[in-house]
Length: 329
Length: 261
Image (cartoon, rainbow over all chains, first blue to last red; front, side, top):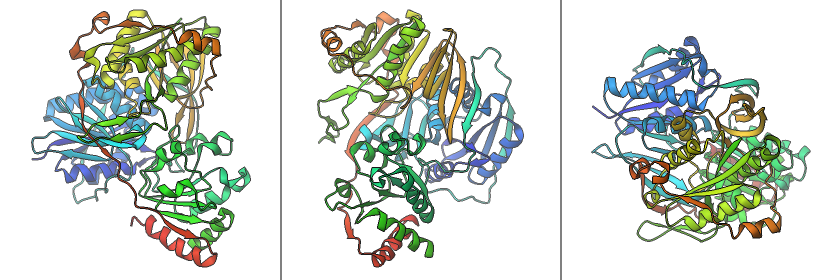
């Protein structure tokens, strides 16, 4: 019998995040018995989400509480930790609790780990378990300039978050997990965060931090009205558009699309930089991408040193022609 | 109203960081205040006027990091913090975020802090652990990704926070902790006189015992065994744009890369 592991099943708009399946892939490869945890505001939607992940786990628990309608660090972290503590007590030691390295996943597991007094390691590039059950992770430090191998110390469970596109996803098997619903009693005096107004777009656009393909536009685009060529290229390539800090600071694009140290770190399979200078603060946000293509008119552009493919040409010629070719294929 | 801001030194963006022989890490000796912490200090100082608040900046160090922490505390002072405090103890040498959070929580409780501002994460490990850990330890609400903040009657906060797909307006009662993000406010450049005066300031120092904590309260639960270099990419293949032909070739390459090749 393998070691027990628990995956936080993050969901949005009824869909389970892809990274959940990738984590299941890695934990399965490590021989773990995997259960999943859904936090949902109502039983119906929670069960639907659980069913979507059921093919890659042995068991899925759905915790139901109105408080799960919107994220609250203190409440969610406490609830998750208390449940995991009970689960470990009932069914035996849990080695790993894992989630995708989304802002929510990281914050939730960080809080839960603190409540249980257990170790936390985020943004795993590698996740290993030795025969004796000890868990080590490989993660970036100093903006990815170096990597560190980190030993999770003390008793389990060890809390880890995993970046999208790091592991191969588990394929749904014949098994379908047993789904248990637990309705939680509202905690009467818990201080809460109340949502007054939501200004979030519906779950239509994939977040750049989770996208497989990102086409990033920079100041070389020259004007806001020209940025649509980046969006069109992203579309033609099957990905999403991102933006450099300069472009966001200029007000052309939203902060949610910013790639870089003070924006988001992306781990796409393919990054295409269009008119991006590739300064260090930007590179730190994208140098973990598997394939890097840079389009720049300057043959000596610094960014080429960090790319797999460097295209020397005027982006206003290159991009439209590329869009046409990609659409034709 | 008592406001606490936690600040941390991190290597400068351009500082050379490399894996050393034997598995350690070598960091060029250029340290700056963590980007998001600077925003937190600026926000705290702006609240001073509107809320007649008192701002304390705190940094947590082992013996080695003390001078770096002093540096960022002096920066906070020059920006307008009223009081600067360093918690220094040999037992903190390998402390992780949970240990740091326990220290900050103990100080906040001791001093009756009503609002704690932090950078949402530090750019050395980007774990973002201290904020949520602090929330659990102190049983106080924590909201991260904050890009807008309004204090209401020193009783509650109206916050704009980043969520997937946009942002959200939330309200939370005090005491509370907030993880600030880019866009909350723009840190000003302190006046030269203030910088000069701050450059001589000595932070108050406390050790763990002074906070009623013991070494085991900050014993690390993670241990960095070794550092390695991030894998280097082989030199780029440079393609000169020559029109349609190049487009076709490039599109092919992109399709292959996109297909997970």
